[in-house]
Image (cartoon, rainbow, N blue to C red; front, top):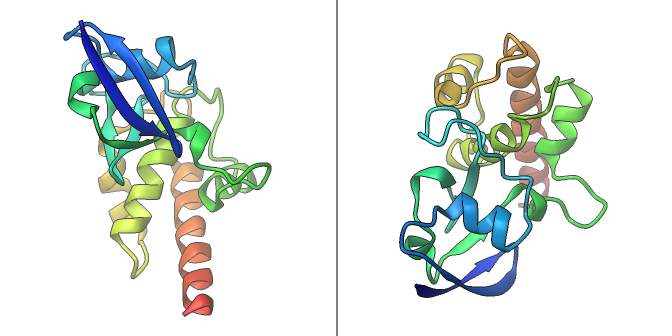
Length: 162
């Protein structure tokens, strides 16, 4: 058993885990953050996508001990209280979900994608970068629309602030 400490959604948390405990298990089972979904457990579907030190990571492909000392953001930590994050708002506005199982992972992947492409996104880039996130319900059309709308909104807001 190993003690781990990390910052999750802005709060310092600690726990004792077995060396084989996946980060997704620690988040869900130890911390109760069930917005991070377990899909394939082989890093193929992207349902477990979170941010580790600001970058998109599939939490089923990382051990909890590897996250010791890291800063983690899950879907629960993305919004600001009752105010949705712009990507969450765009998914709602553009109907970028159906059953909702993939949605947290899609949103986390999208926020990282937008961060890495401050110049904006085109449809090809969004579709290429979503390759590691599977949605079994949609044809991705509204997901892509939502991500592009969020990118535009965030870049417009960023330009106004500058």
